[in-house]
Amino acid sequence: MRRVAGFILPMVLVIIGLLATMMAGFIFFVRAETAGSAAHADAQQARLAAESGLEEVIVTLRQTGHDATAWYDAPQRFRHKLVWSADFDREHDSVEKRGTREEILAQRDVPPAAAWRFSVVADAWQEPAGREDARMRFGLTPEAGKLHLNHASEDQLRGLLTPLLTDLEVENAEELLAALLDWRDADSDIRENGAENEYYNTLEPPYSAKNGPFDSVEELLLVKGFSAAILYGEDVNRNGILDPNEDDGDRSFPFYDNQDGILNRGIAPFLTVWTREPDVSLDNRPRINLNQDAATIMAQVESYFTEVEREVCQGAINYILQLKAENFDFRQLASAAELYQGSDGPTGGAGGTGALANSPVTLAELPYVLDRFSTRVPDGQQSTAGLININTAPARVLAVIPGMPTEGPELIVDVRAGLDAELARTPAWLLTTATAEVIDLAAFHAMAPHITTKAYQLHVEVLGYADHTKALRRYEWIIEMMGPLAQVRYWRDLTALGPAWPIDDKEIAGEGVEVQSGG
Image (tube, rainbow, N blue to C red; front, side, top):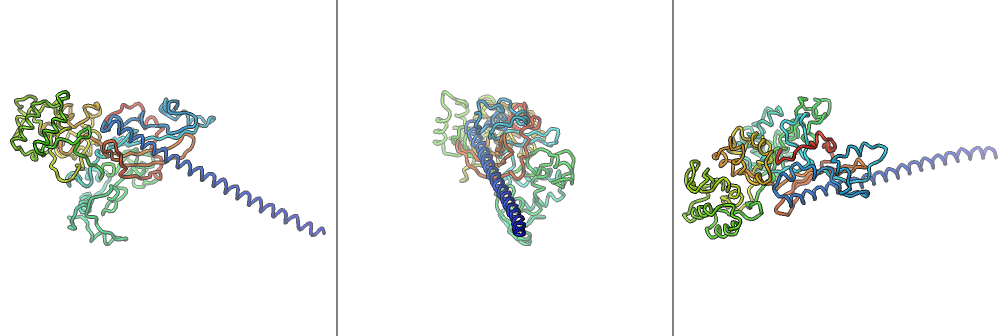
């Protein structure tokens, strides 16, 4: 009997141990599932917070249209904006009042209240972006501030890409350019140093040259010689700020950074495939196309220029109608800008040349002429692709605008920082500000067909996050605004690249910096 009792006790202990182990495993499993569910719920909440940021962007664009001063760098509108909290609303949000979360997050003894937020973040476009002057924006980036990969000429692509590739220490820039042009052209002829099917069919796996327009900038990764290091340079998290791992040589990824204290951003931030602009005025009405018949032009003139609101004098309108009655071929004008010939009176001025030498259009009327009139030859296309926004494009992109003087890009960047919204509405400000010292009338006429001040397609990057948890989602969109309607042209989840943006850092975030119309 004692032997049996001595045998039962160890068995009971073993069974209890197994049950305890099973219970511990079950508890661990339940906790893991609970934590996983909570993490998934937080991720969903962060995604919804980010999407709320997109909706805020769309509402802002509906209200402000092409006014970059309202959304290019607007921390008061796009930084730490509250989406939801059970404890307070936007009117009683202490973060909103202080403009920072630093004090709240630093209070270890008092956990922050549950609050979901978004920030709309963007690169400050500083060149070069060294660590000392690195800064971010809370705003949007117009795609028209970049060079259109499909519509740029070979000279424009060479002018933009060659110095960028040189900064990347790429020695075969001409080969890359030739391969790019071969990829987008419609034929199968191989340029010198280029590539067509003969090369791409030998790869593993094989594929064919597209011989058509790029669908995205990232499509360059399929082109011979291009790589992620060329597209994004050292800026592997794509925030335009030189982070420590991007300036430490081969000690951490990226292992190819040159440790020179300057961020090399690659070529992708300067290229786009999205821009197109309808031939409409700022109030979204069709422009008066001077290649139409006289009756249509007259009807539009009477509708657009009333006696009460006569932005363009009757003499200028009569002059345009007289040219039409005389069968003047407006197709020979590259843009409506040529209706201004430097005269500021009805007798014409010394600046006028050719058939329009006696044009009475004045410099004060030029903004309205540029906004209301068009000489674009109807070609079946409803929009013009590839126009460059002079209010937001970086100097590198401005430099490849046809007709741009050598000193023009840097001067434009300096002058536009002080423009008010009204003056920046049309490209006419190039002739009414200090830039006129460098950009004369001839240069302006050459540039006018290629430039704009409008923003229809915008790059939007939003962080969705919370004060009480570390959950965060990072998304980017390309949206197109056509009047009040917003269309998502492109979407991508960038969460895997990390938060990247120091949204709580006052210095990097440029707190207190005056809002400008361009970077």
